[in-house]
Length: 466
Image (cartoon, rainbow, N blue to C red; front, side, top):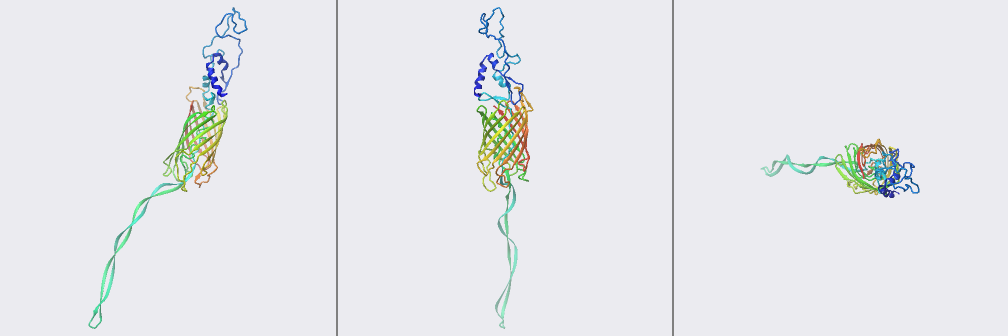
């Protein structure tokens, strides 16, 4: 039926005033129940009348006699764009005007209406996985002996007494001659030859590798609803890994993400791509890294999509391929794993007039067993403090949102393992501002159980709907 709606709208644009009067809809009394409601006005019986110029003797309605002495009661011809059955203050909207009545909706491929602000996106919370490795945190000057040199440090006198018989005397006794000789022997000393050598100071840490498991979750600036959009975002993680590496010093992580999403199947499905860019700042051996993250391909399908209420049940798959940089050597001398990540997920959206609740559960399954398998559950609650249907308004809605994210690793839970991921419960809260087609969010996230993977997270996202 949705495929027939687009030709019907075109036909309505080309029909006359009478056809529009029979086919129009007007907004009902509640316009914020997740989108405007439309209802047909009551049919009011009216006397038959003719259309066109009056011809004497010709009945206005076939079969009805006409008295030429009775004044003609045909209604006045309505100017183009008005409806003779409606009061002047309620002109009949054409299909284009109907669409503008609801600024929270857009046309889909099939010509239907897809809601724009039934719910806002999740912000997200996840910073990555920690890898155990040996790093160089500095250098120490150590003298090192590279050889020896000899020198005479002094002399040692040595006295030698020599006795010899040189003959006999007159009595026949031997004549003995004694010679005393003193010799100075040199004292030889070997002095070491030393040079100053820089010796690396190393430490074993658990480090979040830039680009691994970063920006891959379905709850990162996303929600269960298929959308038409391009977007960008920024995440800042303060003191990431600080509780796992006491005394190491301040380490921060920044991530920028760009992506797009396009709907098809009349707005019930979508395909998208996203790419993160990650930088780490900190002490020697940790900071100064800038890496491109892994490319993620996103698929969504709404099994239930009520365009009048905004309620939705959907599912899909995120496929993350190891295209990013940032290889590292782990403590045992092997290279850090870099898996393809399969992430099937399911989600829902439930709207309540100005409020909405949405939830997502997903399972990240890596192709390498050394990477963690991660079960994720997220729920978000939002409320529109301000929302308007005025198309000329600069700011169309303001909504605070609170999110809870639970991350449960099913493998690699050993803190002393080469790859480690702890249980996490993280709370995110912020504001969403919508400017008709564009939206902007600013939020803060904090871990609430230890060991805390980071201190505090700040994030902001921009989305543009097309």
